[in-house]
Length: 73
Image (cartoon, rainbow, N blue to C red; front, side, top):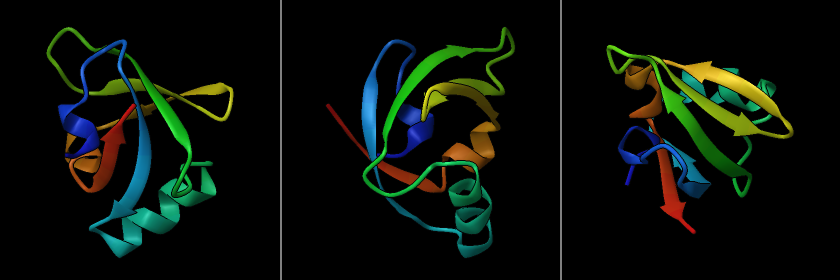
């Protein structure tokens, strides 16, 4: 399952990335494999999504979220 498929209010754990460039970008922002993520909300048109990671809120595009493999908790 990808991060883009996680619904607001659900929590998940990052497993892997399918895009190496984006992997580096997200890891620099604290989105490390094994990190707990909570989807906070989606913007009214559905893009971007707000996620909680490492005690801060990060906005991420749905196209970027599709490259993050996660596991629901």
